[in-house]
Image (cartoon, rainbow, N blue to C red; front, side, top):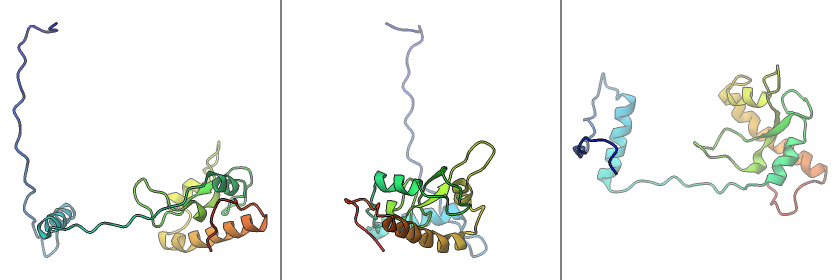
Length: 157
């Protein structure tokens, strides 16, 4: 059953667009041109180096234990969640759960430390990279000291 009296036409197929030539402006390559140049060089070379993926351990039981601890930044209890370190991860990837530390969440009238920490509002990126491993190690020590480390989870130092 036709819905319209008009005759159907096929859309013309387009030819694939070749990437524009890489332009060098003042001795420097613009951002997108640089990416295109690297991609085309990899295609010409015939190989693309794969980035090794880390097999991050996931443990909901451990994340729940971390969330029961008070916030590492402000010390408030009862509003924490497991915060993953921001270093060593990519788009859509989380780091190992055993590296988590507790930070408080947003609540009515208060912006939590977790969102502030992720937005670099509390520390500079360099400072944060130094703090994250220390807080993760301290969190692991606390959970071990309380005798709550999950049986099926391998320990890391």
